Image (tube, rainbow, N blue to C red; front, top):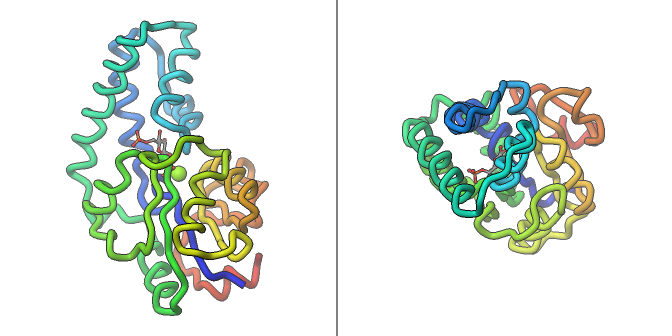
Length: 215
Ligand code: B16
Ligand code: MG
């Protein structure tokens, strides 16, 4: 029934949202925009460019194209300072065990992330070898909830979308998986991710058989 598992990165494999927040907050402070952790929820699964748009809209602020590019560069430089300090202790509970089990059963594993920093993050976590295919923000033109990122992953491993299972923490990501015709397990709160086949708080103590049984 499932021949490929596709993992989102931020919020599923590692909690980088806190580093995105610190970097966006630093930028917002420079721009005199109030930006809270609650606002940060709006940025989950959303591309870097669209994240900046959301922050600017919060304060009804417009920037020139040149200023926007400079903001995006500054934010990413600060974000990368945190990412370069990431290590394996930050892999979220249960993730590595589940991925190891899936690989052991000969099921394909892909990454489907909006992040343009996905490869650096996987390298820091020493998880690169676990993935048959990596599709990230450097390779897609349409952001989630468009299904492009997940459909490309399925195509690259040559598996029918209907036999793919996606793990996602963002509403836009859950919608992207459903738009791709895939199964999706939400990681996070039932309240926000209710469109998923089902929702788990995290991947701790989960086996693939238990998950498939609930789909
Ligand atoms: P970057 P995911 C997404 O990753 C994050 O959830 C989102 O908050 C971030 O803005 C986006 O990546 C772009 O990240 O600035 O590194 O290119 O959850 O799709 O793995
Ligand atoms: Mg995510």
